[in-house]
Length: 561
Image 1 (cartoon, rainbow, N blue to C red):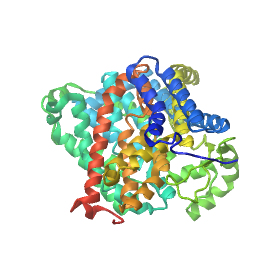
Image 2 (image 1 turned 120 degrees about the vertical axis):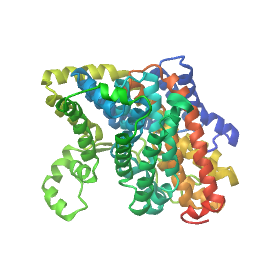
Image 3 (image 1 turned 90 degrees about the horizontal axis):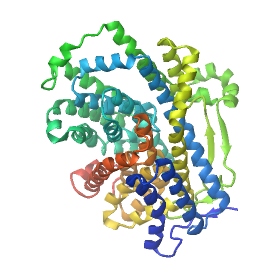
Image 4 (image 1 turned 60 degrees about the vertical axis):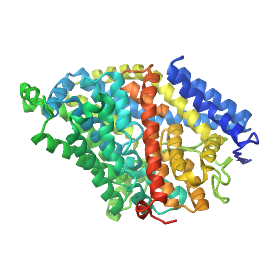
């Protein structure tokens, strides 16, 4: 029997919306106040979601259990799998002492911590986001910032703020391509529109993150670096998204941003940096040995993120005929060994989204858990850790002991992520999220602004720009058409507004706190990043509103009105 969602279960818009807010408000409130440990806050929030879904929304018990287990499994794999293996890799480099050399070598190139912040958290983080999302950039850059002597709170907050502008095109453009599949809109039109919304913020973010660290005056002291990094990212972001597509935007832009900063630093350094640079002398051989593990990691993450690699390891056909001939003999093996699709009992095909959230002819919601352990990004990171560990001189026993210690360190973080993803999936399949979305959709002429905030809300709820696009993509299209707005404009706004919600979603906060050794103090992180997130989301909403109504910005809109 198929259960149809209801979006105003209590018969009143305001009352239904208030009840729908309870799980997320309870979770964030407990995190912010710090009254209980983060894993208990996650389980209490999940309990609230189960109560609201069962009592107010009359969701069948089998569907509630299925959604919770589905989300928890997704939290452990692939997200927890990434976090665990990133920490394993990081602990290996610290244990062997190579991180000290890496830190000192980086200090020669960028002695100023403000410059290090831009180069690592923004530029390198953007490149990593291009090939591996799911919190990977925050985990890696947060760990590096800690070793560069940033305080744990600062490292967590700054890594989260910096991981915004690249998110809409992360993981080889998956958020945009998924939005296209959900809404039926052309992927190139969505890519071009997002590429006309985000670049201005790609320029702003390096200035913003440094100001959050050292204040306005501190930011002015390194403004050429912030400008080089921002323009080095924003210009390729616009060009690639508008003239190629969403797939390589972050890879190209992140690399260009790093290159622009390094080139600038060859000819200009902030005041007071030259003496520090000249005082450090490290043999090139040691520098290369210290950077080698991170080169291995970057190369494997990039290789693992290629569609051809994922198709091979998942046992799926290749798009290239010559590559298909080469891979075809191994497909049967990888199809059985590398990927298992498990329909979620009681949930798969049992929940129906209805208008206005979905079209009238929408099919029941799918719920298939994919265990693609070979092609998962976390597996690539684990392999990089093993290879790098052997290169660094670790024995097999050392690797096993280090992995065991890492697992013990991350055990509560993994439970927390599982509970939070269980909550997120439950809000999606129960219709709680749609109630909140419809409330924002009823804002009439102000919808370009509040529709952008809808994307922000979606990412804050689900922890994923891709999931937010799945959640609200159809609603954005339907509402835009009803109001005479461009559906492409609002579809892209869901994704670009959503990137600013990435820093406050509970999953990302836990990833950051775990990577920086700040676990248990997530409330401090949330309080620091919340207003940055909301302010930036409102700025994106204002920019989208200008594109919707105010010439000459309306000429940027694809799809017209």
